[in-house]
Every structure is written in structure tokens, then in C-alpha cells.
Image 1 (tube, rainbow, N blue to C red):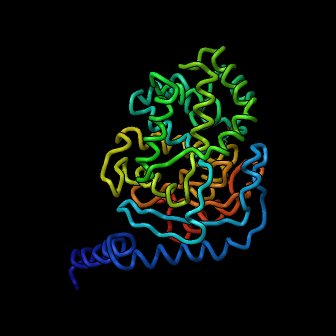
Image 2 (image 1 turned 120 degrees about the vertical axis):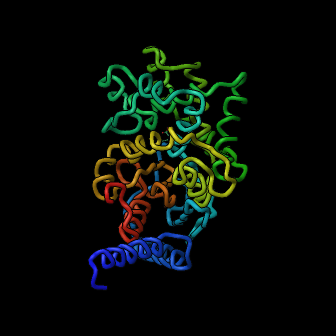
Image 3 (image 1 turned 60 degrees about the vertical axis):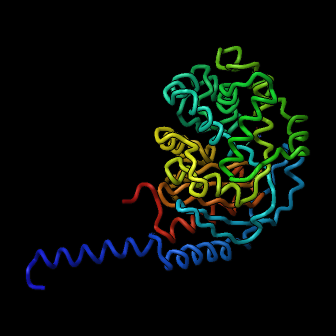
Length: 336
Ligand code: GLU
């Protein structure tokens, strides 16, 4: 191997085959992912920090020790460990998917102009954020913007309107999902703050349906029951450029995938998103039900469920487990 060109070809051959061996279709991929997942589970399972959300009474009653991690790769392979079959409330994670659904009929630029795509840096149900940002909802994945986004989904009846959301979520999960009625009743009885936000937005001209109907449909979308496996499956289309890796159906346009991920990268973990992106570097969305979904574009969706939350509303164990897996597998969207 005297000639320098041969040497370069040889070295780049090693690099390419190593990259392929790390995350291509090969038996080693299984071992690498499974091992990272198991280690994340074992290292995190004893964490005791955090507390279930209790402003929605149903959520306070969910067993705090449940913990499950599911990875679905962009080629449709599933890796699971722990309590991956327990049905919990999707809550705020629904916001990313309703945004994706709205983008099927509304141009992403219309979302930017009429709802906003900036970070609020404030709690998910902040009223001050609306006032400070020129009386606008600021982001489709805080409560205000999520209700405004919900109001962009049209139906001739309330049932038809929500039916579109549930059908879309079910296609993403690749199984028929349902609203957890007890959770919905619990949220609907205690959502005065959200109703007030909806009315405020309507007064500023940022609602495209009756505000109380939009708030109710939003409350239902948050009460959809998913397992950790459903959540990873729902995220797999986002990881795979918009095409569901198993059904092969295009569920998000090519244009909307990076937009949804950008919004997640800005606001996905509420006011702690900056710290999350700085330390982990993956677009993610959390919900007060205890789920977090993180996306590694082109590679995989990582979903973790564990109810105890930090002060901002993000599952403590889920953050740690995803951070561990991302670090172990070398995933960070800011790294080459
Ligand atoms: N349904 C919850 C609410 O509106 C969702 C909050 C969240 O998960 O961030 O308060």
C-alpha cells in the first residue's frame, strides 16, 4: 500500500464500513441498540427524584414506579424494555402530532405567521408569554398555540373534528387508539386555566373555531391513551422523513418533518428545552403524563415513560434514559 491514493481509499473504506457496521442493516445494530437500552434502563431505574403531576387528579394516581423504554428504528425494528404496555396519557406530546396534522392542510408558513414558532422560555400554560409576544400564541407546542393549532383542524361536527385527530394518531401508532375517558373527565373538570387561555386568544383573533370547542378537543387529544411502544411507533414516522416505517404510508410531508422537529427542538421540554438541547442535542417532546419522545432524524425514535416529573413538567427518568442512550450511541443533531 505504497501509493498515497491507495492508502486514502483503504482508510476511507474502513471508515465507511465502520459507519455501516454501526447503524446499517446488520446483526451488530441489534446488539448495540439493545445494550444501550438495557444499560440506560438499569442505570436509571433506581432514580427517585420527581413527582407525578397532580393538577390533573387522574395523573396523580398513576403508579410512579412504572418505567419503560422503547426504540423504533427508521427501518421499523422495535426494541423494548420495562413497562412498555401500560396505557398513559399522551398529554403535551400530542401537540407535535396535531401540528403535523394541521400542516397537511395549512402551509407551514401560515403556522409561523399566525401562531408563531418561537420559544417562550416559560411554562407550558403561561398567559404572560401570550401578552409578551404581541398577543400571539408563540408556539404550536405550548397550550395556547396547541389550542390554536387544534382549531385549524376542521370538521362538520365536533365528533368529526376530533375523529380526524384520533384517526391520525392511530395511523402513526399503527393501531386504533382511544381516549382514556377517566383522564378526559378529570382534565375537563379542572381545565379552567386552559379555557381562559382559549378565550384570551379568541379575543386577540388567534382562534379559528369556537374557543371552548377548541379547548375541549385539545383536552381530548391530551387524554389519548398510548403505551411507550405506541409513542415510539408514532415518532418513527418523524424519524423516517415522514413515511411510516412499517405501513410505508406517508404521514407527514417532506417539508413538514424538519419544521415539526425544529419546533420540538425549541420548546419540546418547556422552559428547560435550552438545557436539553445543550446537553443532549435531540429534538424531543415531553408530556405531563410522564412520556418523552426524542427523535434521531433518519435513525430512530426513542420513547420513555415514567410518571415522576421535574419542576418544569418533564419526566426525570425519561430525560436521564434518553440522554444516556443518545450519548452511548453518539447521537446529537449538532454533531457530524
Ligand atoms: N393537558 C395538559 C394541560 O393542558 C397538557 C400539559 C402538558 O403535558 O404539558 O395542562
